[in-house]
Image (tube, rainbow, N blue to C red; front, top):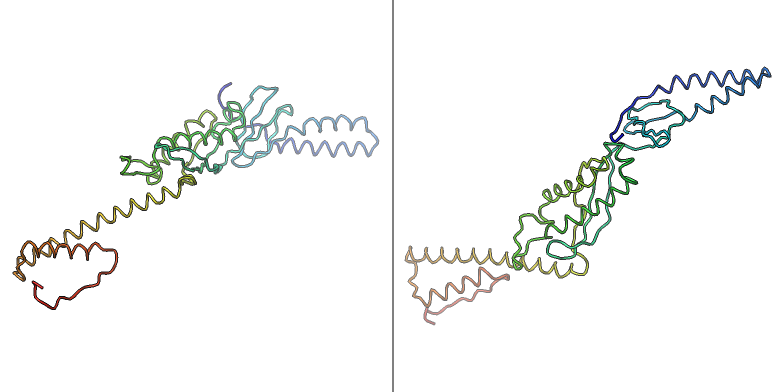
Length: 286
């Protein structure tokens, strides 16, 4: 037997009713002084009592007879089976697993802290019970291994100064990384009969020893990008101003005055502080 076998044993309510009748009969026999007749009933009651099995909704019981797999009960209710069966309880409910924060290296070798949130459930009780040892611990170990592998496949972020131009990064590509993580974890847990319902990154940050340096690096990258946009806008505005002055013949500027005007406008438009104007009350030459 290498596959799960679903079985539905006899109803436990019928056996429970018979046991109640035997208990009442044993009591009557004892009261009437016929203890020797009540003793066999007591033995029968004790022998049949371990055969009761209670299965809750989204629960299961794996039955074994002296090491031989008999089957799995997935139907909820009260049942009665062979009293010599051993019964292993396996939950079929969805479970959450929040892994510890692991310190790993990303694709560029930067140390990062990462954790994952996993939602899983057992779909094959035979594999969960017999293919692996302690399937809950198996989920923890394999999830950590999958997270370590995933972190080494992608960079934390894109940095132009290192020539990194990845389409998928751990920080920005949340959906793509989650899909890759879910696929990786599912491949590892399939041998245990476990289905992965959801897998996503729960925590992601640079390791403490490089966190401050990387924060400054990100800030510098953002400042450079912002300045680049400001300069592009300022050049367009200066070009537009000179074109309008030239078309409307408001003022005739030679090359020297044009250069001075461009310089002043660029200072005004690109400065990160308010500019104090200076009023010239003289002529254009003074």
